[in-house]
Amino acid sequence: MPLRSVFFVSDGTGITAETFGNSILAQFAAKPRHVRRPFIDSPEKAWSVVEEINRTAAHEGKRPIVFITLVNDEVRAIVTGDECHGLVLDMFRTFVEPLEEEFGVKSNHRIGRFSDAAKSEEYNDRIEAINFSLAHDDGQSAKNLESADVILVGVSRSGKTPTSLYLAMQHGIKAANYPLIPEDFERGKLPSSLAPFKHKCFGLTINPERLAQIRHERRPGSKYAALENCRYEVAEAERMMKRDGIAWLSSTHKSIEEIATTILRDIRPDRLIY
Image (cartoon, rainbow, N blue to C red):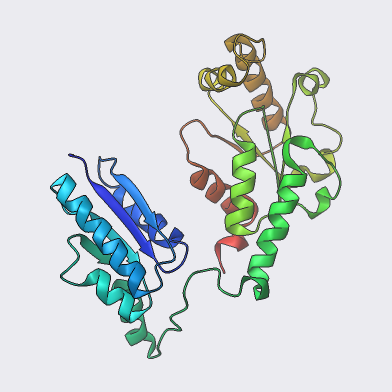
């Protein structure tokens, strides 16, 4: 596909527009240039974005794709008007208006997901979960593990930290993570601090070749990154998890979103219903 730009235009953060737009774009074998334009909440800003879209169209010779989440009618009219030379996909008009008709009520036309964040219990729960995950990253602390929703275990660099933070940020899950190290394999059992909470543990494993590649980027030429050592650690970690009845999956070819959803399904299925 020739050079093509995709705009995500919102009067909030633009995260919703970009997340939805990327899900749609993933169906196509293309890597367009992404442009996020958040907080477009006035006619002046709307006209500025339209001018940028039009310049891009003239430069690329193709009309840009424009995903919008705009609730202000005046601002939305500018971006969706004939003056804009992009293919505008209006998420609110596509989804909100049919739902208004189906529910028989008008939407509140709230700008952004995070309005009145300080008053939101869900928001405060997520902040608390993020703080918990940071405090319990990489086995830093074994305190308050009884408060954890899930404890991720696995060898170093298998994806535990990003998965923990994603679970906290997106789902308000208190996720600790604990690395399994050669000393654990020599003892032949889970670290003693994890034993009482084995029912909360979920394991991540990874292809040894991929693990070696990741570790070489961090510590090139080290025993830590050597393929033979990676094979040993992965095999021992999988053996330990199997012996202790800990569910696990490979992070090698899975996105953080897929890993997190699997964990929620197996450990906290209630969080998939809200």
